[in-house]
Length: 468
Image (cartoon, rainbow, N blue to C red; front, side, top):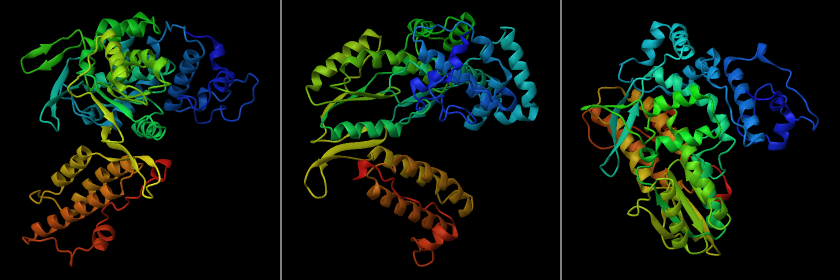
């Protein structure tokens, strides 16, 4: 599949150990010299996860060191038991609803995980595996529209995860740095910090772009051609094609499309990134003057110059790859005059407290604030027949996740509002259960809520340059 030289640590040193798949427990990657060395700590002492990470590291290094190399023997890596077991562990950790067969993760655990994985391995080895149609559900959006979500069976999610574990390192080696969505070592918070950095550099002309039905518009034929530039293993390509063409179980029957990577599948974000990487690469010559920051299908472009010209070029680029900008939602913004939203944050460049210079400020958007309020309201509904301890148990992870995401921003005012809102909702829940009105501040003090009940209380911000 690839030459032994891909294991040499000299390759890792040249690329830099900040890249994904190069940080590995027990690896000699840390502190190696410039001479060629081989990692002598091998498979006997490695866990299942370690073995998969070692495979990913080798694939990544090979792809990174030879940009034109095409991988022709990957299919057998997908049904390796360590890969399937690692895939199962990740799917199990993600929980999720059952597919059209109704089988839950608990059902599989009750029947026996080992038998389940062995049967799956045998079907893949014999090339008899066929995915089931995905179950279609619709998630309401804040604007009242519905977002289609496709739910594969647990069995298919495990195979998709194993496929992703094997092919993702190959494409990660090619992806551009301005892409942050659903990638190892990348995050939405990193993308947000890039936006504030460029705003502080003076790039205040902003294109807040919206790609219309992005995930549903990606043509299968062109996507498979892009994948085949790196992977020529016919069995892997056939497996990906099966997932793309598996069909969606609607109320009216099974519908099969020749476009789209259905949202909800394990492999869908990677496939979308492979396709959208063409946009990133097409924009690369302009990144010096108008950097594009993309998280999946959400993107913004910042520039000092004429944003209308940059928008025209973006339209040309998306059209070339059979995608379409939603011009009703795409906006041209002067960040010193109005705010814009990206990845749940609102941004604006305005005078600092001393009124000596303009700096970029960012905070949880109104939409994000309304979303967390709605979740808190639903959990603390006084009509729920549960004890207050159960309410706190449900509230804490929701609050912790929201705070951890937004604590990198100028969020102190928003945090204060949410903290007070949550505390009062809990107080009201307790009072209503006792058929009493009001909030009962006298009986249910902050000390009781935070020390007695254990309500989440850590609303501290992360100290970053963006907060100065």
